[in-house]
Length: 253
Image (spheres, rainbow, N blue to C red):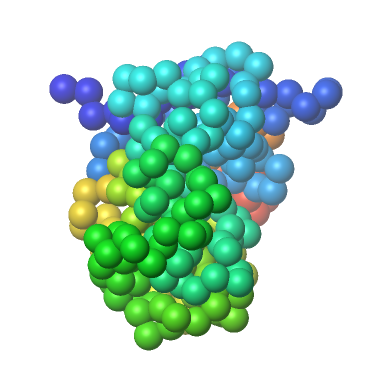
């Protein structure tokens, strides 16, 4: 039985003379947490952008559960069950936390982000109940009526995660989920992502913090200059001399 849910095959992407991705191949297994790591400029975020339809590859393909994603628009990819948490939280800062979580749930149900979603929020009791449950699960329920823009950076990241979870994705892509966080908020995020893992959701994480990577990942792919240079379990990657060279000039990570 093939447990691959996301498959990246021979993906190449150039920007002018810069090769951001060079024939990248990647298999993401169902219900696993797969980390993608590498130095700055390795092509990690470009790869996620290809997967969610924000960037069209020059060559190659991306498939999710056997369905081709290449050529689809981001909202179409979201509809098949793929959600992404960005490096910079993408929230509605002037709306409450409750409204922020309800809007993507409405969009998922209706097939697009419609302006009238803002007008009909109050009448959607079923979605409101689910939003409350998710905010409680992420320890944000006490701030449900606060404006999202007033949150700390760590809480904004958790709010954006709540906005993804309410859409019931089968695959969650997280781009630097702990960037800029204090160690306290980072550890809270690790605990949260471990709880999500227990539910069987497949996750792909781009992360520079090796504490986060080794705390969460079942498998790790290492990119350098747009090329996959290593892949394996955390222990295999940790002991790989090529990975050590790419990161710290030969020092152990």
